[in-house]
Image 1 (cartoon, helix red, strand yellow):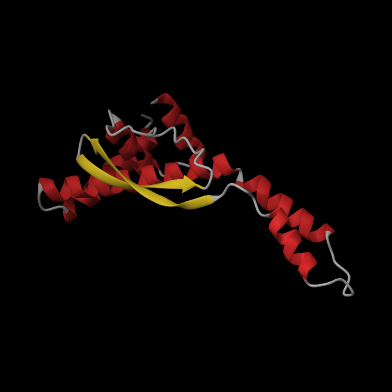
Image 2 (cartoon, rainbow, N blue to C red):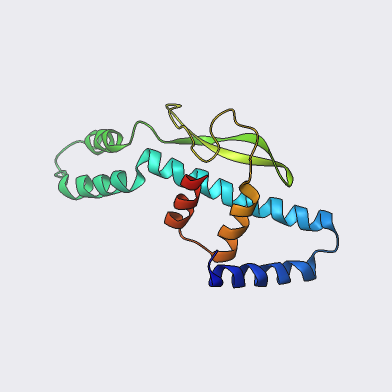
Length: 156
């Protein structure tokens, strides 16, 4: 861990120490941080899976290039709009309870319509997180970008 990360972790620990009255309070805060970080990672994985950036650029390009004359019927733009709509997209969330070093955490795992999303952070049917709590604390302490988080997840 580099010096800036260590310093940020100590500052965060100091802030938490003033607000947490018991060990249970501290564990609750840590579980909340872990839940938030894991859900963000899962959502990022879903974004990559659905390739949102490519789809949004394609939609913008096709909208600019497909101006319909006023004489055409109003049904044409509706068909064009449905053709541009991606076939696989987000389809809600499902609850998943995982057991970590700090206890049980219930996550909202994103789903896709085709059922092809295979999360890498917490694979399907996995219910145990091993050694993940320390990594989550370091992620929050540093305020890392998605790329930094991805590198740490690959290490795990």
